[in-house]
Image (cartoon, rainbow, N blue to C red; front, side, top):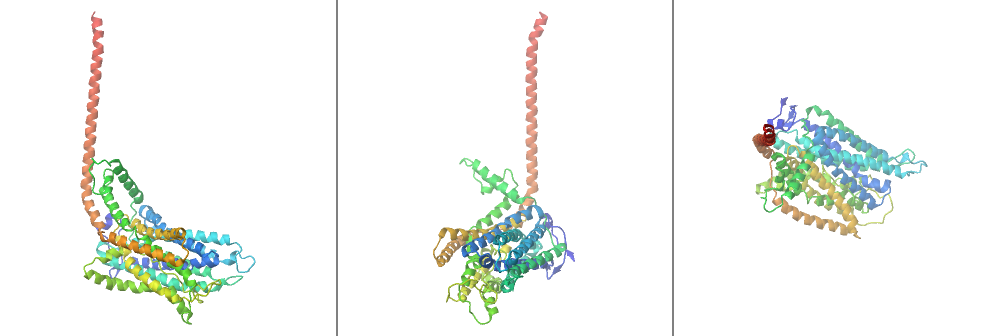
Length: 563
C-alpha cells in the first residue's frame, strides 16, 4: 500500500488515495474493466435483437424498424454531451456513472417487460391485443437506456484514465487497449447468447419467441455492472468537478466571436487566433484550453460518414441476412457463431496484431501513423449484429419470403473489411481523446467524438429519406462513394494535424499566471488610483469654482451695505 499522488494531480483536483498496484497497474482499473465488460454485454445484447423485436414483435415494416433503430442509436450518442457536462461541471465522473447506470438499468428492465406478450393477450391467442401499450413501454425503455448508456460513455474511459499518474503513460496506453478488448469480449458473448435466448419459446398462455428473456439477461448484466463499479469506490482516484466548464467555454467562444465582429475594421491589428479576441475578458489558460479542444473537434468533422456505414451492420445488414441462404452446415450453433460474431472475433484477433506488430513496423519506417489513425475511438465498441439468421436462435424469417440463392457467406468479406478499417481507425482513439483533452475538459472532448456517431446515424436517416433510391444496392454504392470522398478530405486534414501535450501547455500558463494576475492587479490598482485622483481633482475644481462664484455674489452686497 502506498500513496500514488503527484503535485500535478493535486492541482488537477485529484484526491489522495492509498493505491494498491498489481504489476504497476492500479487495482481500481480492474473494477472499471469488469464494469465495462458487463455494460457492453448489456447494451449489445439488447441491441442484437432490437431490429427483430421491431420487425416481428411490434410488426413494423423494414423502413420504420430501421428509422427507429438509427434514431435510438443517434440518441445514444447525443446524450454523452449531457453526461459530460454533468460530470465535468457538477457531479464528477464517479457519481455521474453511478446515477446514470441506475437509469440505464431501469430502462433495460422496462424493455424486458415491454416484450411480455401475455400482458395484453386477453384472448390467449399469442398476439398482444394492445400493441400501443407495448410500443409506448418499449419507447420509454429505449429513452432511459439512451440517457444511461450515452450519459456514461464519455465518463467511464476518462475515469479509467484518471487512475494513472503522469509517469504512467505506458500503463495508461495499455489500459485503453485492455478496455477496448473488454468491450469486444462483452459484445462477442452477448451476440452469441442473446439470439439463442430469443430463439427459445416462452409464455404463460402461448409459446412465442422469448424476447423477455433476450432483454432480461442484459438487464441482469447491467445490475452486475453497477454493483461491481460501486464495490471499487474506495480505491478510485476521483477528480473533483471544476465548475460549469461547458457554460464557461460557450461564453468565452461567444465573447471572442462578438469581439472579433466589433473589431473587424482593417485598421485594427489582427490577432494570431480568433479565440485571442477573448483575451480582454478571459484568462489566457482557458483560451489555450479551448484552442486545444477546437483543434481536435475540427479534425472530427469528417468522421460521421464512417459511422454511417458502420452502424448499418445492425440494421440493413441484419435485414439483408434474413433474405439470404443460411444453410452453412448441419451444425446450427456453428451457423449462429459464424455470422453473429464475425466482427467481434476479428476485432479480438486484429487489435493485438495491429497494436504489437503493425504499428511498431510503421513507426520504424519513421511514420507517426498511430496518431493519424488513433484519434477517433469506436463508440465504446460498436459491433456487427447479423446474429446468424438460422433456426437455432438467429433470425429465422418469421414470415414467408421469397427464396434466395445468394449465400449468407457473402457477408463475411463485408465484415472482414469493415473490421480491418475499424481497427486501424479506432483502436487507439480512447487514448488520443484523453491525451489531447485539457485536464478539465476530458469528458467534454470524448462526448465530442461520440457526437460524430450520432451525426453518422442521422445521415443514414436523411439519405434514406432524401435519396429515395429504388434499389438497395444503389444506396450501398452511394454511401461507399461518400466515404471515399470523406477519406480523402480527412487524410489531408490529418496530415496537417500537430500533436499537442495539454499538460505541458497548462503548466506553461500556470507558471505565467501568477505574474499575469499580479500585473492585472497592479494595472487595476493604478487605474483605480488614477480614477480616484481624477475624481479628487474634479471635486477640488468644482469646490474652487463654487467658492469663486460665492465671492462674486457677496461683493455687491458688501458694497450696498457700505453705501
